[in-house]
Length: 585
Image 1 (cartoon, rainbow, N blue to C red):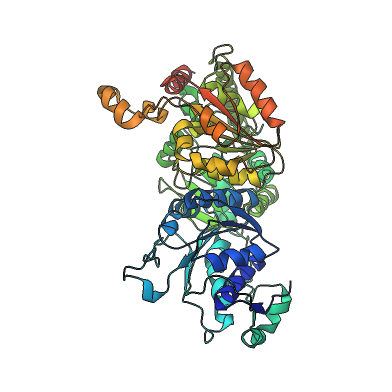
Image 2 (cartoon, rainbow, N blue to C red):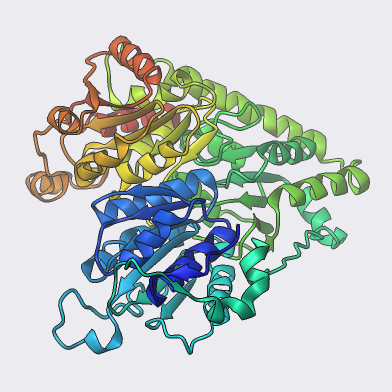
């Protein structure tokens, strides 16, 4: 792509340069909220033929939508907003992006320095507004001819290398003086761009950062022998789509180690995985079988199961090894003794080859195989118990969580909402679910409809979201984004009339206060909300109806809301009964 040299003014030249450089760095989607001060950025994006544009009136929802786009596409996504409180509305999504390792780029328009702190309209102090949550922040002054274009380009490249390349959000703040809108007279800026001729015609970023990944982590054979011939396990939390789960399975199979996999791991329900880990660790036999494990190989993190998290924090580990493609600390129990950073697939393959070449005569391997079979047997016992857990044809949150995975097509993406839904699926589900997305960085309930809509927008086939009623109410206006999805997109709302998660907490002695101040019953449903946005709506009353409506929605190339209305407190009761049922196993 040859960069144009004619622009209305410097505001448009700089805006076009910034967006062009981000496109060369891999950005393909741009989310725009209407605003005046951001007009140069918006119009530069509008004329860029390589960018797919998404427009939404609410900056908060827009940022979460962009987060979903970035999660699903595995590419950085740009958000453009005007100045003032619009900038603050992006903050929750930036926090989630930082905590969950998503490369979100926010470009905020700003008033020039002379309009700050003087009572000017829509002018706030925007520098440092996101604190340390962005991996890098750029604060561009109002464009001036004396500032080299190469400085703008290298600043963008350096900030991108320090943020998005590391899976962190990035903030670019652009001060603009008027004029903010294009004129009919276009000015030739060849005299400013001439010294950047290689960039004008190359199609490449101005500065290309080169990275070498060294996965030679297996050189210390003495250390790895201690680990690999020990009584170990592999625990897998949230991992990216770039990690081959079969390489992880291959290593575990070679070692005869069990795999405990979180619902977010893309390994959930895999035949090689020990199912129902949360309930297994609540069972007497499960506790006995895991008591003598002494080596941990962790991949990913942000585990849903509190029992698994506590087990990892309290275990008597000889070695606790973390494998990750980033340096981020994910170590809630402060137990990790080694953290290897690199391509997880390559490390797993290298460890497998090392074991076969050096330690294949390990005398403990047979014993580990017997332990593995016992753990799988215990998991099967729990499966048999769960099969009797739910009444015939009665539609409950627990039943939906236990069966949803088996009802979805194999290539269906699934976004799981925070609070109760993600806990229910992690506990009750044992069906293969491969393409799972969550907002478990900061685990808020805001922006879930928007994030799921972003994921669905770039999904090639089916996409399903399952969220709670409070999360749904919190993000109602993002249904305007949901209706734009042109492929099968189903939002399952588990409506237990309030904050059902609080029924899991020890609030029995303050039941009245708990209902008023925590559970907040509302008596609302999603029928009219769906109608307002022209979205199909179903409210099944039994299991068979749920299946029927789900199949119908999967065949419609649009958004459908399926609302499951349940009795308040029922999900907590089902979780309690499940734990009671396995304790004696």
